[in-house]
Every structure is written in C-alpha cells, then in structure tokens.
Image 1 (spheres, rainbow, N blue to C red):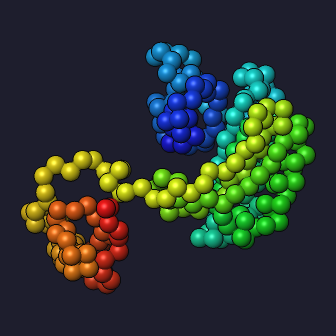
Image 2: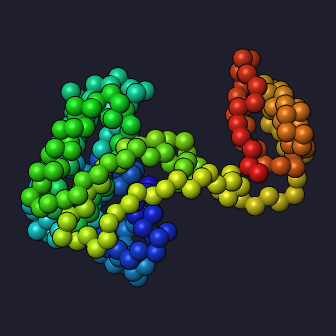
Image 3: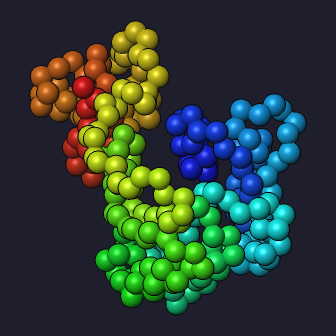
Length: 255
C-alpha cells in the first residue's frame, strides 16, 4: 500500500516520489497505479518514479545520481525473522540482512530525514541487532539525531492493535525545531471506518451456512444480554467462524 505516501497525502504535504523498491510484481503494479505520479496532485501522464526490483542489487550511487538526494526516506525492512511469532532467526538469514543494504543506501543518500520500521521483537528478542543498527546509523557521513520508540497503531487513530519499533533519523542541518514523538490520543470509534448504516439488519441478513449462522445467533444473544441493547440496531464486530468450539463473543462495540 505504501502507507507513507498515503499518510503524506492525508497530511496535505506536497511531495515528489523519486523511487520505491519491492520485488513482488503485484505490489509494484499497485504502487504504480496509486502512486504513479511523481508529484502529489500532478496531472495525469507525469513521469513515474522508478520502482526497483531488488534493493540488494541496486547501485546506490547510480540511483542518487539519477534521482538526487531525497529529503525523506522510509523503509520497513522484513519483519518475520525478528517477530516473536516467527522463528526468531534475526540477522542470521537473508531477510534479516536487508537492513544492511538499507544502511548502505543511507550512507550514500544522506536524506534530510529517514524513518525505519520493524516489529517490537527486534527490541525484545534481538537487542544486539538493534544496537548494531543504531551504532551504524550514528556513523553516517552527516550528523543525525537518532531516536527510537515502540508505538502501538491503535493509540494513534488506526484500527489495528499492532506495536512497531520506529527508528527516526533527523539530519542536524535541516532541523528547525525540536522533534517530539506523537502522544497517544486514544482509540477512534469503529464507526469512523465503516460505511454509513442504511436501515437496520434483520435475521434474514444472517449467513445461511448452518454453523456460522448458529454461532452468530449465539453472539447476538450474548450481546443483547451483556450490553442490554438490540444488536441489530447497533454496530458490532464479532469474530464468528464455523467451529463447534466457538467460545463466545470475541469482538468489540463501536459506540
């Protein structure tokens, strides 16, 4: 999706896309379709930023000679090898070594600002790798202010309970005011992310598959009992599958 570009658009920041990198062809096609114009708001048919197939083989100097030095560089290096849900092999495998190539690019590009993202398992299970990353970033050719935080998306208006490590680098010569990390501002109502409700649901709208229908009816009864409301006239998200081991209501209410 290239969330950084979406965020910049929502913030109303004028920007020019120089390049991206993704080895997966469908992801490249998605990127070109949604972010093809190099300048935010530019007319159709403008030059498309370069999409590189593999940053591990990209010639960083040639890329900078072609595009110039970026003001902002954002990279989310592969997380499965650092995740607590994975095998936790860290930098011992090729995926875990992508960060080496990212730092190599930063040495050449020296952007005004960079933002790197990964799972919090990098902090809890691979502290030696994280410390190496921070040390290498502090040795970049230009002096940077380097800072790091572990933030949860759901504390900042995003409907996703996901903790992530963010590593920020600000080149000292471009800093105009002290940087502060955003303060948590609470969860948004789920209704903010749903289409407007048109009419009320009825029992005819329930799934026809027997197991899923049975489980959803059980959930509706539990919602009515627990929240003292008509569940067909309020907005709820309920996790319901076709398992005989369904364990009750597993969801939340949008007030």
